[in-house]
Image (cartoon, rainbow, N blue to C red; front, side, top):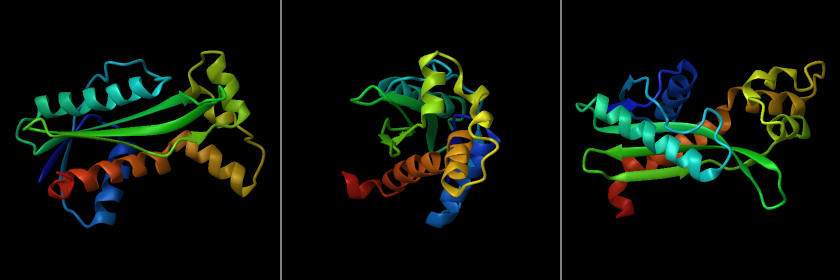
Length: 171
């Protein structure tokens, strides 16, 4: 089996490989540099979903010998009380236009990150500044979660792969 992945990010490829190993599936991954068709920092759920879908479709178009395309997009969402949450959306598109779209849990960002997003600054340029002089487990975890995004990327990718690879169960 071959997956056309809509990114060449070493980090995202690593997380995808970790999920595939957890599931116990051997897959060849073909990374492709594609455009998400959305802003660099999606600030709403629909835009994030469109970005992952665009990536999946574009990757499969560039690699028609693959079984399906996979797109991964991290974004932010404003919740019901006006606070930003971080989450990931993953989409898979098959040659037969079979589509699976799954999201991770949404995690409320600390006030430090809230202020950066409210100022319409790019969060990625500031994540290392979050309580950098504090060595405390929860702070360390949140710092790494926002910087590396590993838990949310792996959750969304796991969700979409389980649905895609076991698609007969979801018909």
